[in-house]
Image 1: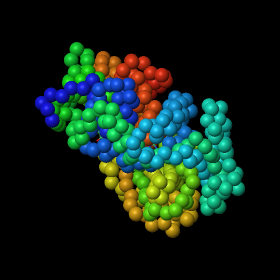
Image 2: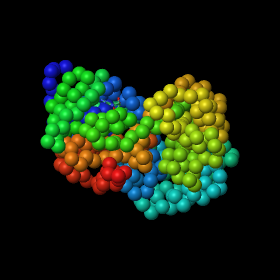
Image 3: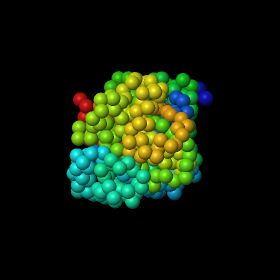
Image 4: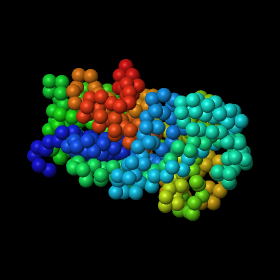
Length: 390
Ligand SMILES: Cc1cc2nc3c(=O)[nH]c(=O)nc-3n(C[C@H](O)[C@H](O)[C@H](O)COP(=O)(O)OP(=O)(O)OC[C@H]3O[C@@H](n4cnc5c(N)ncnc54)[C@H](O)[C@@H]3O)c2cc1C
């Protein structure tokens, strides 16, 4: 690397959020450099499911962001060279108990009032969409707008398109310090040398807290581990993305959907299943605060498998070919942190997407591009300000 580089904007992190931010910035003609400590998609974005799920979002700004994001996917599909395997397949959320179904109905009503098309299905209606569902499942909610995407290809595709539009991507390049003088970002010091820049976007996922320390700001992000099983490839078995109501409980900390079982609560277990374009089924997942440990554990793997079979008994006949774990960048309320930092001009935050970063990547990239280049955004991002935690 040359002794001193420069760029109009430096994006720290080559995950889906950094790649989407770079993509939208480049579309506006900005000069962009992505600085990635490891490799593109080496963080959470390469170790997750691909749900673009709307019915799992919290009412308010979170759901609005998800809806806007969902609407951006078709144009991204058009514009990327890479096939991101986007599939508007609809999403089912299964109820194990009559109480859960009642709560899902109440939730569907609220989501509908907010403009999202969600219906509840009786067991016989559910069977039409999911024929071999367990007989104990009491019904489901269904959202036709829910979709799926290949998260790895989405990240690589966005980064590649940004590069085609002029972005520089520095891999194996760790940000070690950010120089601020007279309350303005001036320089990013990396393991490969220094980069002059007056605008820096922190999209460093679970590394964001460390980046914040460099400008003496606390960005409260903790790694939340999620474990997933991957089965052998099969002809189409699932036409929709599928989850259990407890997934909503552990994801959004909603008491009415929390699992009753103590072990499941401890693991933050919530059932999810999706069949990828290549035929493999991804089965999830857990939510554990285990520091930066991204190893899988036998307890969690067993619990995920047992839980999945209770919803879809035929899963027991599939061979599991591998398991993996990823670390979600999680803020104290599980919502993204977006915006500027008081007293440090030119520093922008786009992190904390927890279990929603794939879904929210397009809108996050668009909003960050607007904020960096125009100083204002087309959607109100105040609810996602860093200062909501103070
Ligand atoms: C098991 C699991 C299932 C999930 N399922 C879904 C889902 O179905 N739908 C959905 O929407 N979301 C899902 N998510 C969440 C999603 O994966 C994340 O929200 C998203 O990937 C976060 O993207 P990111 O770019 O912020 O972080 P990351 O992908 O982690 O990228 C951050 C990057 O920053 C780099 N970095 C860190 N520090 C530095 C530094 N000092 N210098 C340079 N680079 C640095 C890292 O190497 C990393 O590559 C899931 C997550 C997990 C773990």
